[in-house]
Image (cartoon, rainbow, N blue to C red):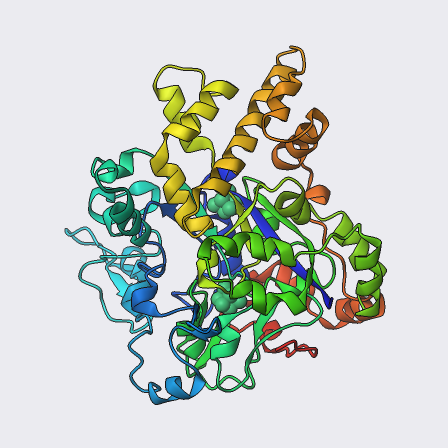
Length: 507
Ligand code: SF4
Ligand code: SF4
């Protein structure tokens, strides 16, 4: 057993209100400068929809992530480093700017400086990249937000296409009217990152101390193999510097025990941050299991119980400090993934072993029940509806469990039970233990889960240990943390922090 510690995130999709605050604050902190105009380290997609970049989940086209060979080994879908060097000047699997969008601004000066005259001045859109006028804006990072234009766009969602093949007639009706939800996305800081293995110059790496995946700006040659290799399309090319950039998990904040900017500013309070302990010796095998449906359970099996004395002992031998071990025991992320088993990984079939997990939304089911005039909070109604409403469950399974509906149903039933159990308490009725028992939990566990999912305070949602104490104090002195916390003053300048090359590399 080789114990390693990773900072991980869980997002509760039932609580995302699609306000995009996380995207805006992240952009202000990290990509509010030339060369990254089109870049959103954090973005929020409406599903069903095409996402950003368009149809990023279509791995037939983009060749991101890993595939399993007949002999049971993993290989990059896009091919190894050597093959990719041959594609250096014509990589067919690289998204173009139009696949993201042409970032634009408006000629505001025309409005404020136009001389008095008979004609109303206008502010034409102009490209932020070329400075040229844009005749017609036809796509943006949130073009299909809130199902806008869904009749035209939602059927092009690669997941809709995939499950339409599987469920046939059932999905031929007005699909976009049956449900919608938001999916906020950042880099997954994967345990088996395809971006790192794709990089021929060794610039991409996963930090040994906390698992954060970063780009060493000094070593990056701008070959963009990482952009192709990442199946989540969460590495971006800075066209000014000619280097790759990506979500840094706000490491300067994490190192001093602060939550990421997207987590701290989340209006829905739907993000959780905490430590996960895992057995690094099991990662390669777990990522290569034959049946895609086994990928979710095999990743869970890599995670270690932070309360187990043998794990604590082995972790100490690996150099994990007591502060980190305490944080692992208090980790809300561990509770949601392993204790209550209500969080699931995003596209485990890409075999990168992602570390940003999601609590699937129950609200499409609740709304569908309420729309029939029935009580949408009643446990019996909800359990029945989860079984009956195949389309949302199959869609969620295609996103979160490589198409296996059983774990998604199990999570939704647990969430439905929690709602019904807590409603009785809030209405002053008797506690109904049978509701908790129906999903394999006790009433006390239901109440704990409710506290964490519904009303947790910041200190319960973010349990972030600092770097080793002396290192943390040195970091607080040397990192311009104020600039990271309030980056507006630094507009136009690349953040200094991106160029730091922290020391310990795992890969
Ligand atoms: S999600 Fe992040 S860590 Fe995973 S492959 Fe993509 S860039 Fe790498
Ligand atoms: S800030 Fe929170 S609630 Fe708003 S879109 Fe982002 S994740 Fe959702």
